[in-house]
Length: 202
Image (cartoon, rainbow, N blue to C red; front, side, top):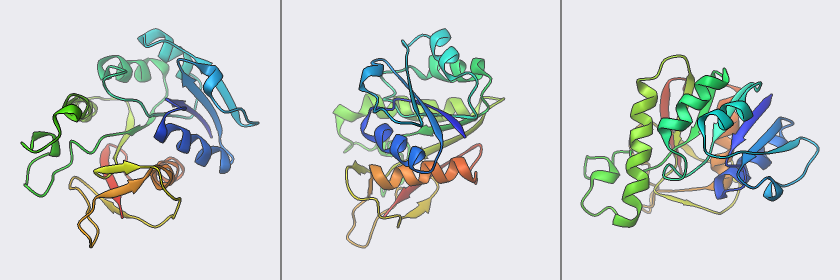
């Protein structure tokens, strides 16, 4: 496939770029600083600003688009319309864990113990999920990581969930960027959650 990847140089985005190109997909890395995109036979770097028109133009002509950006850095009210304007229907979003329901029975971002520093971005992520649910014309999938979203190993072994945080036997909610990239690539190649959100964790 020809895949547009917005945010190809971030922690998650760079792993997604590698996973997709390792599988033979052609990826256009759409970023503010194209010089930072790793070079490769299957990689094209495109510089863009945060405007709706610029993003739509960069995304246009691809089979699918993946966005892996902080929600505070790229406004969902610009990003989602830009994807629609591009004409690309298949849209996979690197979401946040804040909108997942935690042990207290409420979304993580609404829990009084949720770290205040992360609340603004997580709230925007929850808003984007709600926005997507109200949007017609996109075959979207929103993928939420576990609470701890960190660098690690590509194990290929993890569990799937829907709207609740996943915890392992030790009580940890965790997934590596590398394994998250596998879930993104798998969903692009064989869609199972169109118009839905899912999460993964160990």
